[in-house]
Image (cartoon, rainbow, N blue to C red):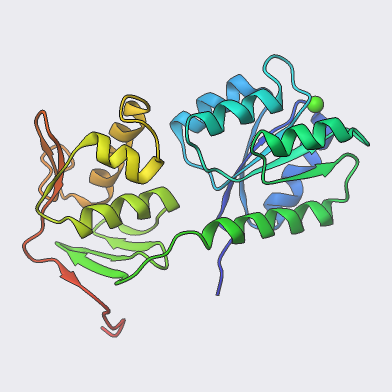
Length: 244
Ligand code: CA
């Protein structure tokens, strides 16, 4: 049942041969992969898109993998991190894990083992989202939080873990204003004064998915100076049959 094949993986690796082998294998397994050569480049990617797993080489030009991982965790990111270390460098391995990496592989590694680690990390992280009362519908949208899928007027979409978290919060407090601080705290676990652009991007994305006219939102409303509110008079909670 577990569908990990559409997981998005961000690879940060400056050695072209290694990167090439990894990407080839990830794509052969059906994962979507994005490759960066440096931590700086990866930072920009993470700000712009969402990923399910970060594969992070330690030895990078500029900010190294350890420092990058430390910064990521400091910002409250729970993105699973698989760190790639140089052969036999025990210091690096220990440092990697203490900076918040979830697992590590020592170079040179077999691509088969690499794929197994990737799969295990994705499985572990997906298991952390617990979703109850998983079906919601409003307007022409049907959302299955447990399966992380939605049917929208524009067609079917897959939801990311963070999108599911945010939707859960909105649904559980339907009709009530949720402050930006609460959203940031509940979804990202970060202090309200950080990451505000990320939150705005998320709201824009939810509107694009679910609103008939994203510029005139009906369901995901902005409450000026206070936060956001999910409203849906016709929403239904609870299990629904798939039969048409
Ligand atoms: Ca390297």
